[in-house]
Image (cartoon, rainbow, N blue to C red):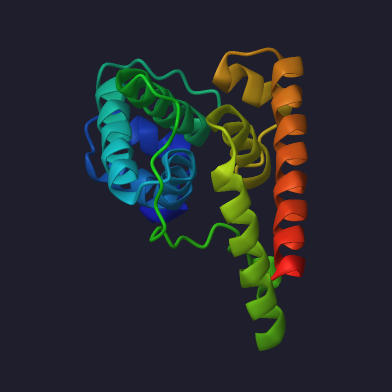
Amino acid sequence: MRAEQKSDFDLVQEFIDGKDSSIEVLINRHKDRVFTYILLLVKNEELAEDIFQDTFVKVINSLRQKKYKDEGRFVSWVLRIGHNLVIDHFRKEKNLRTVSNDDGEVDLLNSTKFADLTIEEELAKKQVHGNVRELVEQLPFEQRQVVVMRHYMGMSFKEISQHTNVSINTALGRMRYALINMRKMILDQEHAFSLS
């Protein structure tokens, strides 16, 4: 069986047993998801690259030290490590406001279900996704974090509460305020547009 066809569990076991090439397959398999997640939180491509690299250094070290207990959720474990490194970064900065970055062009909602769209539909979809991404980036960190985890990573509110170390009610509240804030931003933009 080719390495690309093996499960995460098998590749982790191979790496622990000394086959270094297995970690490359795992990194390549999950790099887009992990990097996009980090980028959405920090909004700075260089910082996201640094945290992404630190994440996989920590993953490799943890695997070598046999600290990983497989529960069939390797990528969730990697995302948790990345998430914790993002939090550590903001704690060190002593500032929960993120840096602005306008050149981070990542196709966040790339999906095979949109493969048969016409050119016009594809352009409209990209415009909508770009607009939504801009709104998400303007949210306070805690709200943006919940939106990213729920809508871009497909996590349940239970998983979100575990990842962020808050209650499910707090996670739900943050999502509610995020949606209220995004709705308000849309109305403000529409009002400004109608005045111009």
